[in-house]
Amino acid sequence: MQYDKPPILVFGATGQQGGSVAVALLKKGWPVRAMVRDPASPKSIALSEAGIQLVAGTFDDADAMRAAMKGAYGVFSVQPSSPGGFVTDEDEVRYGKSIADIAVSQGVRHLVYTSGSAAGDQPTGVAHYDTKAEIERHIRTLPIVHTIIRPATFMELLVMPGFGLDEGRYSFFVKPDQHMQVLAADDIGKIVAATFADPARFGGQTFEIASDVVTGCDLQLLFSEAAGRPISYARFSDEVLAANPFLNKLTQLFDNGRLAGHADLDALREINPEQQSLKSWLSGPGKEPFERALGVGGAWEFNR
Image (tube, rainbow, N blue to C red; front, side, top):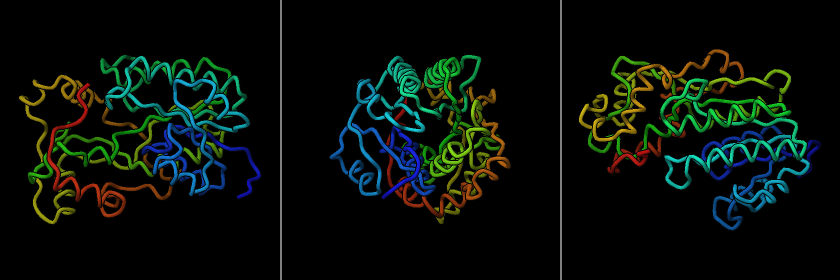
């Protein structure tokens, strides 16, 4: 396939965010590169078959990152974080800063970094978000056009095992009448593609992104409708929160508004007219993972 513009390098293309971005950029006619750990893995092969150029490398390999950015117009930067259990908080910060620094040295014209909705000037007390705020601050000191997006809670997170769907109930961080914004991973790519297409508008901007806003009561209604049977909703119990400090800290961030989400949904809908509601997601991309969660128990996987 021939392109008339330079490529965009996408990190994390075998994951949710990077994969969404890679697909959206391809649809908009951008040539896409992806740095992957193992080009022979099934996910990497799928990227190659879709028309994405693969570059082998890891976040610890600065030479590979420099090679991957050579001649690139833009870079989409996302790193693994400590709740996944594979890297430390220090690793995440080092990776995020290194990508940004190398982008400058390689003459990349537009860097898009994905942060977190709770990141900001004031520490949260949760390293998962404060690491991202540190990377944000570093990027703003660099001589490069940059855009920082702060995604809301992923819809995909809602249907992870451990929230009780297999038992006909559901527990999460918000109170029944408390609002929170949520985001479909597919919408990330569409917003990022629009961002790369208009650096004059989005350069230097930091903004939250989301697809919909729901309450705990909404989750009960929508999940019951999707399951075809009653799914009751309740916030995590005091006993559960007392036994899991990480869950407790996240719950406090919802209560003080840091994780509730403040994205301008109307403005985002203008950028991405295909923006998904949780209802439409549950009947589309989320149908399979939701049905899978109905039959899978287990503990919540993140505990940091």
